[in-house]
Length: 322
Image 1 (spheres, one colour):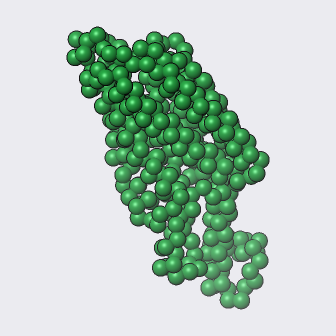
Image 2 (image 1 turned 60 degrees about the vertical axis):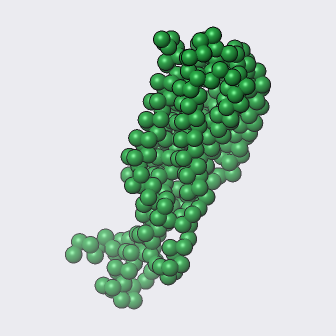
Image 3 (image 1 turned 45 degrees about the horizontal axis):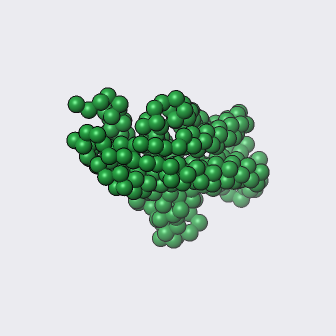
């Protein structure tokens, strides 16, 4: 009979794999419409890496838990590969959230500097800490060879500092998002902008809660459960960041579709959709499109009318009454 604690980890991994597949099925239509149907770009590459790499480490981790591996060296090698997959995946997801925050702030230099410093102080030490933890791992042969999984004999508790650094980085992103949300939502009436800030703050709460849970588990739980929530954190990061990217891609696709034609359709179709440009610029572009449409309407009804912006707005409102 498998002990309860040994059932906990594989059960959690099964739940993670189920969530990963379920979310993929729920958003597959959006992926086809906004990623595969558009030219390849930096944003779409980030999306595909963030979308499909979690399958590798999640099912690799699940495989390690269900197979009977009684070779300590094999356990160490496979867990080393798995650990670096998880670390790279979390860094990738954090990078997406950071780029999104830079875009929310209109790519202001001070924000870029703050987030670059925060990233450097998080990612570099986290990589070093992960390497130190891997070197400290020692697996031992199981006393019950028929039981699945690897038996961890010794490991350093240093990994807790990686989770603390990650929580601090996420807090920086969350604070900057909250500040910009407070500044922007007082003036913006765009439903998608409001939804973007709402989702962003909600996602921050989720990932921060997982980071804090990882710190507590690493500090208080038995050593064999220290990385129990590493895979859930990886999967949640991926799922939430995928939704962030799809939300941006959906808006960008709609904006470009509604843009007045300034080039031939064939030329426009070959252009990749921008991802992490300023959302401020995007709102200004929407406004300019609206003004251009107003001007076109006025000129049709009043040939030779002047093109002054303030007059256009007033005249359009006046004409709409009739």
